[in-house]
Length: 329
Image (cartoon, rainbow, N blue to C red; front, side, top):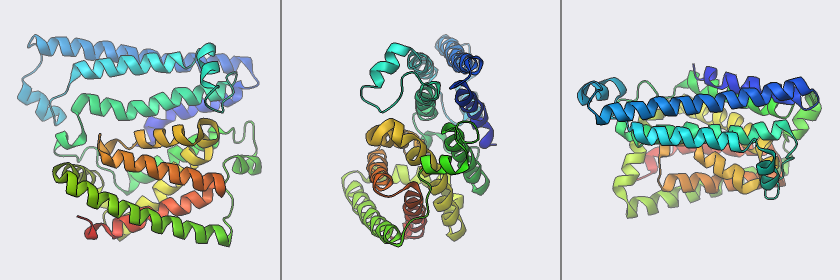
Protein backbone atom coordinates (compact mmCIF):
# COMPACT_ATOMS: atom_id res chain seq x y z
CA UNK A 1 0.00 0.00 0.00
CA UNK A 2 1.24 3.48 -0.89
CA UNK A 3 0.17 4.78 2.52
CA UNK A 4 2.29 2.34 4.52
CA UNK A 5 5.61 3.73 3.27
CA UNK A 6 4.78 7.03 4.97
CA UNK A 7 3.74 5.54 8.32
CA UNK A 8 7.21 5.42 9.95
CA UNK A 9 7.88 9.08 9.25
CA UNK A 10 4.36 10.11 10.31
CA UNK A 11 5.03 8.45 13.68
CA UNK A 12 8.38 10.25 13.95
CA UNK A 13 6.65 13.56 13.21
CA UNK A 14 4.18 12.92 16.02
CA UNK A 15 7.05 12.07 18.38
CA UNK A 16 8.84 15.27 17.33
CA UNK A 17 5.84 17.41 18.25
CA UNK A 18 5.59 15.67 21.60
CA UNK A 19 9.30 16.30 22.01
CA UNK A 20 8.96 20.07 21.79
CA UNK A 21 8.04 20.09 25.48
CA UNK A 22 9.05 16.62 26.66
CA UNK A 23 12.71 15.65 26.81
CA UNK A 24 12.06 11.91 26.56
CA UNK A 25 10.14 12.26 23.30
CA UNK A 26 12.79 14.65 21.96
CA UNK A 27 15.52 12.09 22.57
CA UNK A 28 13.35 9.34 21.09
CA UNK A 29 12.80 11.43 17.95
CA UNK A 30 16.50 11.97 17.34
CA UNK A 31 17.20 8.28 17.95
CA UNK A 32 14.50 7.28 15.46
CA UNK A 33 15.87 9.69 12.86
CA UNK A 34 19.41 8.42 13.38
CA UNK A 35 18.05 4.88 13.11
CA UNK A 36 16.60 5.69 9.69
CA UNK A 37 19.92 7.21 8.65
CA UNK A 38 21.67 4.03 9.80
CA UNK A 39 19.31 2.02 7.60
CA UNK A 40 20.31 4.18 4.63
CA UNK A 41 23.97 3.46 5.34
CA UNK A 42 23.32 -0.26 5.79
CA UNK A 43 21.43 -0.33 2.49
CA UNK A 44 24.36 1.52 0.91
CA UNK A 45 26.68 -1.25 2.13
CA UNK A 46 24.41 -3.91 0.65
CA UNK A 47 24.23 -2.03 -2.68
CA UNK A 48 28.02 -1.67 -2.69
CA UNK A 49 28.43 -5.41 -2.14
CA UNK A 50 25.99 -6.08 -4.98
CA UNK A 51 27.97 -3.71 -7.22
CA UNK A 52 31.17 -5.59 -6.36
CA UNK A 53 29.49 -8.95 -6.93
CA UNK A 54 28.13 -7.78 -10.29
CA UNK A 55 31.60 -6.61 -11.34
CA UNK A 56 33.01 -10.03 -10.40
CA UNK A 57 30.22 -11.80 -12.28
CA UNK A 58 28.84 -13.41 -9.13
CA UNK A 59 25.21 -12.26 -9.55
CA UNK A 60 22.54 -14.00 -11.58
CA UNK A 61 22.74 -13.51 -15.31
CA UNK A 62 22.07 -10.06 -16.70
CA UNK A 63 18.98 -11.39 -18.46
CA UNK A 64 17.65 -12.81 -15.21
CA UNK A 65 18.26 -9.59 -13.30
CA UNK A 66 16.58 -7.51 -15.97
CA UNK A 67 13.66 -9.94 -16.03
CA UNK A 68 13.28 -9.65 -12.24
CA UNK A 69 13.67 -5.86 -11.85
CA UNK A 70 12.55 -4.72 -15.29
CA UNK A 71 15.90 -3.04 -15.97
CA UNK A 72 19.62 -3.52 -15.45
CA UNK A 73 20.24 -1.86 -12.04
CA UNK A 74 23.18 0.43 -11.34
CA UNK A 75 24.20 -0.78 -7.88
CA UNK A 76 27.27 1.44 -7.62
CA UNK A 77 25.30 4.66 -8.18
CA UNK A 78 22.66 3.41 -5.78
CA UNK A 79 25.27 2.74 -3.07
CA UNK A 80 26.74 6.23 -3.44
CA UNK A 81 23.28 7.83 -3.37
CA UNK A 82 22.19 5.89 -0.29
CA UNK A 83 25.37 6.78 1.56
CA UNK A 84 25.15 10.46 0.61
CA UNK A 85 21.50 10.70 1.65
CA UNK A 86 22.06 8.90 4.94
CA UNK A 87 24.95 11.18 5.80
CA UNK A 88 23.06 14.31 4.71
CA UNK A 89 20.02 13.37 6.80
CA UNK A 90 22.28 12.94 9.84
CA UNK A 91 24.23 16.15 9.22
CA UNK A 92 21.11 18.36 9.23
CA UNK A 93 20.42 17.16 12.78
CA UNK A 94 23.63 18.75 14.08
CA UNK A 95 22.92 22.00 15.99
CA UNK A 96 25.68 24.04 14.25
CA UNK A 97 24.33 22.97 10.86
CA UNK A 98 20.76 23.88 11.84
CA UNK A 99 21.96 27.27 13.05
CA UNK A 100 23.65 27.85 9.69
CA UNK A 101 20.51 26.80 7.83
CA UNK A 102 18.47 29.16 10.02
CA UNK A 103 20.39 32.06 8.51
CA UNK A 104 18.77 31.38 5.13
CA UNK A 105 15.52 29.61 6.05
CA UNK A 106 12.92 30.74 8.63
CA UNK A 107 13.41 27.76 10.94
CA UNK A 108 14.08 27.56 14.67
CA UNK A 109 17.40 25.69 15.01
CA UNK A 110 16.45 24.57 18.52
CA UNK A 111 13.16 22.97 17.41
CA UNK A 112 13.06 19.19 17.11
CA UNK A 113 10.07 19.55 14.77
CA UNK A 114 12.09 21.74 12.41
CA UNK A 115 15.04 19.35 12.62
CA UNK A 116 12.66 16.54 11.66
CA UNK A 117 11.36 18.60 8.75
CA UNK A 118 14.91 19.09 7.46
CA UNK A 119 15.57 15.35 7.69
CA UNK A 120 12.23 14.75 5.98
CA UNK A 121 13.34 16.96 3.09
CA UNK A 122 16.31 14.63 2.63
CA UNK A 123 14.04 11.57 2.75
CA UNK A 124 11.71 13.10 0.15
CA UNK A 125 14.76 13.72 -2.02
CA UNK A 126 15.70 10.08 -1.55
CA UNK A 127 12.35 9.01 -3.03
CA UNK A 128 13.45 10.72 -6.26
CA UNK A 129 17.18 10.18 -6.33
CA UNK A 130 17.21 6.45 -5.56
CA UNK A 131 15.03 5.28 -8.48
CA UNK A 132 17.07 7.51 -10.80
CA UNK A 133 20.32 6.11 -9.41
CA UNK A 134 19.11 2.51 -9.69
CA UNK A 135 17.40 2.60 -13.08
CA UNK A 136 18.28 5.91 -14.75
CA UNK A 137 14.63 6.90 -15.10
CA UNK A 138 11.27 5.16 -15.31
CA UNK A 139 11.42 4.92 -19.10
CA UNK A 140 14.00 2.15 -18.63
CA UNK A 141 11.54 -0.07 -16.79
CA UNK A 142 9.32 -0.85 -19.74
CA UNK A 143 6.36 -2.46 -18.01
CA UNK A 144 5.32 -0.19 -15.14
CA UNK A 145 2.41 -2.24 -13.87
CA UNK A 146 4.12 -2.63 -10.52
CA UNK A 147 4.55 1.12 -9.99
CA UNK A 148 1.65 2.59 -11.96
CA UNK A 149 -0.61 4.88 -9.95
CA UNK A 150 -4.34 4.21 -9.82
CA UNK A 151 -7.20 5.77 -7.89
CA UNK A 152 -6.41 3.92 -4.66
CA UNK A 153 -2.69 4.76 -4.73
CA UNK A 154 -3.38 8.43 -5.46
CA UNK A 155 -5.79 8.80 -2.54
CA UNK A 156 -3.55 6.84 -0.18
CA UNK A 157 -0.71 9.22 -0.97
CA UNK A 158 -3.04 12.18 -0.44
CA UNK A 159 -4.03 10.87 2.98
CA UNK A 160 -0.36 10.37 3.91
CA UNK A 161 0.69 13.86 2.81
CA UNK A 162 -2.28 15.47 4.54
CA UNK A 163 -1.50 13.62 7.78
CA UNK A 164 2.14 14.65 7.54
CA UNK A 165 1.02 18.26 7.24
CA UNK A 166 -1.52 18.04 10.06
CA UNK A 167 0.78 16.25 12.49
CA UNK A 168 3.74 18.31 11.32
CA UNK A 169 2.17 21.53 12.60
CA UNK A 170 1.28 19.80 15.87
CA UNK A 171 -2.42 19.14 15.38
CA UNK A 172 -3.90 17.66 18.59
CA UNK A 173 -0.47 17.95 20.26
CA UNK A 174 0.71 21.58 20.21
CA UNK A 175 -2.26 23.07 18.33
CA UNK A 176 -5.93 22.23 18.44
CA UNK A 177 -8.19 22.12 15.39
CA UNK A 178 -8.79 25.80 14.64
CA UNK A 179 -5.24 26.88 15.43
CA UNK A 180 -3.83 24.08 13.26
CA UNK A 181 -6.04 25.02 10.32
CA UNK A 182 -4.95 28.63 10.70
CA UNK A 183 -1.27 27.59 10.72
CA UNK A 184 -1.90 25.65 7.50
CA UNK A 185 -3.85 28.61 6.08
CA UNK A 186 -6.82 26.36 5.33
CA UNK A 187 -9.55 28.99 5.11
CA UNK A 188 -12.54 29.34 2.83
CA UNK A 189 -11.45 31.46 -0.15
CA UNK A 190 -13.27 34.73 -0.74
CA UNK A 191 -15.06 35.39 -4.05
CA UNK A 192 -12.15 37.58 -5.16
CA UNK A 193 -9.71 34.77 -4.35
CA UNK A 194 -11.78 32.31 -6.37
CA UNK A 195 -11.75 34.74 -9.30
CA UNK A 196 -7.98 35.17 -8.92
CA UNK A 197 -7.60 31.38 -8.81
CA UNK A 198 -9.43 31.10 -12.13
CA UNK A 199 -7.02 33.62 -13.64
CA UNK A 200 -4.00 31.76 -12.29
CA UNK A 201 -5.30 28.46 -13.69
CA UNK A 202 -5.78 30.04 -17.12
CA UNK A 203 -2.28 31.50 -16.99
CA UNK A 204 -0.76 28.16 -15.96
CA UNK A 205 -2.56 26.32 -18.75
CA UNK A 206 -1.29 28.80 -21.34
CA UNK A 207 2.20 28.58 -19.87
CA UNK A 208 2.05 24.77 -19.88
CA UNK A 209 0.92 24.65 -23.51
CA UNK A 210 3.59 27.09 -24.69
CA UNK A 211 6.24 25.26 -22.67
CA UNK A 212 5.18 21.96 -24.27
CA UNK A 213 5.25 23.46 -27.77
CA UNK A 214 8.75 24.85 -27.21
CA UNK A 215 10.05 21.66 -25.66
CA UNK A 216 8.60 19.54 -28.48
CA UNK A 217 10.20 21.80 -31.08
CA UNK A 218 13.64 21.66 -29.44
CA UNK A 219 13.68 18.05 -28.23
CA UNK A 220 10.89 15.91 -29.68
CA UNK A 221 12.51 12.65 -28.56
CA UNK A 222 12.83 13.82 -24.95
CA UNK A 223 9.30 15.18 -24.98
CA UNK A 224 7.97 11.84 -26.25
CA UNK A 225 10.00 9.90 -23.67
CA UNK A 226 8.62 11.85 -20.72
CA UNK A 227 5.14 11.67 -22.22
CA UNK A 228 5.41 7.90 -22.40
CA UNK A 229 6.53 7.76 -18.76
CA UNK A 230 3.47 9.78 -17.72
CA UNK A 231 1.16 7.60 -19.79
CA UNK A 232 2.57 4.39 -18.31
CA UNK A 233 2.62 5.75 -14.77
CA UNK A 234 -0.71 7.60 -14.82
CA UNK A 235 -2.39 6.19 -17.92
CA UNK A 236 -5.17 4.57 -15.91
CA UNK A 237 -6.19 8.05 -14.75
CA UNK A 238 -6.28 9.68 -18.18
CA UNK A 239 -10.08 9.81 -18.29
CA UNK A 240 -12.72 12.11 -16.74
CA UNK A 241 -12.94 10.22 -13.44
CA UNK A 242 -9.17 9.92 -13.31
CA UNK A 243 -8.87 13.65 -13.97
CA UNK A 244 -10.99 14.29 -10.89
CA UNK A 245 -8.76 11.98 -8.85
CA UNK A 246 -5.54 13.55 -10.14
CA UNK A 247 -6.91 17.02 -9.53
CA UNK A 248 -8.28 16.57 -6.04
CA UNK A 249 -5.70 14.12 -4.70
CA UNK A 250 -2.68 16.16 -5.78
CA UNK A 251 -4.36 19.44 -4.94
CA UNK A 252 -5.32 18.44 -1.41
CA UNK A 253 -2.29 16.39 -0.43
CA UNK A 254 0.56 18.30 -2.07
CA UNK A 255 -0.75 21.78 -1.31
CA UNK A 256 -1.56 21.01 2.32
CA UNK A 257 1.98 19.73 2.84
CA UNK A 258 4.19 21.84 0.58
CA UNK A 259 2.39 25.16 0.68
CA UNK A 260 0.42 24.83 3.91
CA UNK A 261 2.96 23.25 6.25
CA UNK A 262 6.41 23.62 4.66
CA UNK A 263 6.44 26.98 2.87
CA UNK A 264 6.36 29.10 6.06
CA UNK A 265 9.41 27.20 7.35
CA UNK A 266 11.34 26.45 4.15
CA UNK A 267 10.54 29.62 2.25
CA UNK A 268 9.22 30.06 -1.28
CA UNK A 269 12.23 28.87 -3.27
CA UNK A 270 13.28 25.86 -1.17
CA UNK A 271 9.72 24.55 -0.77
CA UNK A 272 9.30 24.86 -4.56
CA UNK A 273 12.56 22.99 -5.13
CA UNK A 274 11.37 20.20 -2.83
CA UNK A 275 8.05 20.14 -4.70
CA UNK A 276 10.00 19.75 -7.93
CA UNK A 277 12.25 17.02 -6.55
CA UNK A 278 9.41 14.70 -5.55
CA UNK A 279 8.07 14.52 -9.12
CA UNK A 280 10.29 11.58 -9.95
CA UNK A 281 8.32 10.40 -12.98
CA UNK A 282 9.66 13.27 -15.08
CA UNK A 283 13.33 12.29 -14.60
CA UNK A 284 15.80 15.07 -15.48
CA UNK A 285 14.00 17.05 -18.15
CA UNK A 286 12.44 20.46 -18.86
CA UNK A 287 9.30 19.12 -17.15
CA UNK A 288 11.06 19.40 -13.78
CA UNK A 289 11.88 23.05 -14.44
CA UNK A 290 8.25 23.63 -15.30
CA UNK A 291 7.16 21.94 -12.06
CA UNK A 292 9.51 24.26 -10.14
CA UNK A 293 8.01 27.33 -11.79
CA UNK A 294 4.48 26.09 -11.06
CA UNK A 295 5.56 25.53 -7.46
CA UNK A 296 6.74 29.14 -7.27
CA UNK A 297 3.39 30.36 -8.60
CA UNK A 298 1.45 28.24 -6.12
CA UNK A 299 3.72 29.51 -3.34
CA UNK A 300 2.94 33.10 -4.28
CA UNK A 301 -0.77 32.24 -4.23
CA UNK A 302 -0.32 30.84 -0.72
CA UNK A 303 1.48 33.99 0.43
CA UNK A 304 -1.10 36.34 -1.05
CA UNK A 305 -4.23 34.31 -0.32
CA UNK A 306 -4.28 30.95 1.49
CA UNK A 307 -3.64 27.25 1.05
CA UNK A 308 -7.26 26.54 0.14
CA UNK A 309 -6.90 28.80 -2.89
CA UNK A 310 -3.74 26.86 -3.81
CA UNK A 311 -5.73 23.63 -3.62
CA UNK A 312 -8.38 25.12 -5.90
CA UNK A 313 -5.74 26.22 -8.42
CA UNK A 314 -3.80 22.95 -8.35
CA UNK A 315 -6.87 20.71 -8.55
CA UNK A 316 -8.44 22.66 -11.42
CA UNK A 317 -5.16 22.89 -13.31
CA UNK A 318 -4.55 19.13 -13.03
CA UNK A 319 -8.13 18.29 -14.02
CA UNK A 320 -8.08 20.53 -17.09
CA UNK A 321 -4.57 19.37 -17.98
CA UNK A 322 -5.79 15.78 -18.25
CA UNK A 323 -8.92 16.73 -20.16
CA UNK A 324 -6.97 18.92 -22.62
CA UNK A 325 -4.11 16.43 -23.08
CA UNK A 326 -5.24 15.40 -26.62
CA UNK A 327 -4.57 18.99 -27.78
CA UNK A 328 -0.89 18.82 -26.84
CA UNK A 329 1.91 17.80 -29.26
